[in-house]
Amino acid sequence: ESGNVHGMPLAALLGAEPAELHIAPQSPAVLAKHTVLVGLRNLDEVEKKIVRASKVHVFTMKDIDTLGITEVMARAIAIATRGTGGFHVSYDLDVCDPTVAPGVGTPVRGGLSYREAHVVMEMVAESGKLTSLDLVEVNPTLDIRNTTAELGIELALSALGKSIL
Image (tube, rainbow, N blue to C red; front, side, top):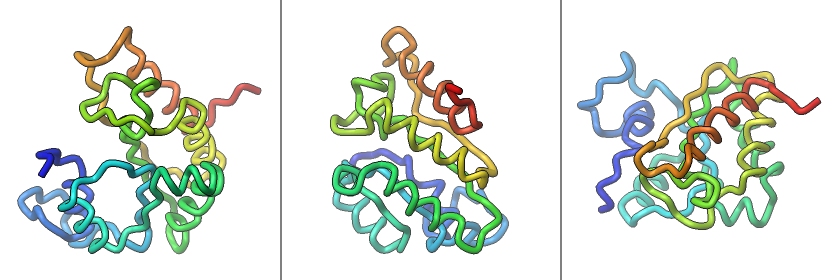
């Protein structure tokens, strides 16, 4: 309904449509039992049905508010690493609150704070299981004084183990 196609590559890797993407030689290339979405807060009705049907693990912003980001990430990393050699992180910067990351295509209030965003990546680094990383949804034309781009760089450094000590 929204016209946003952000989840299509993951859907294709999980074996669902759109098959036209042809991004993996085998289908499914990623198993739902190892796939975790963290920080969901604004899905249209069609997206909700697709996510529920996919059987991926989901932690919403309400879960983060209730459990705390460290508990959510501990659970997410446990799911992603159970029986795997490691995990890929695709960090969509619109998971962050627009006050932290204004330069994204789909800003929605109520996202991760600056510290929560870094805790996610710090825990990823501490797990020692990160195999690959991408950061997406930086739109320079919507950014304010390069705030979102700089946050993306900081988050990548956190994921790779840069610490304050």
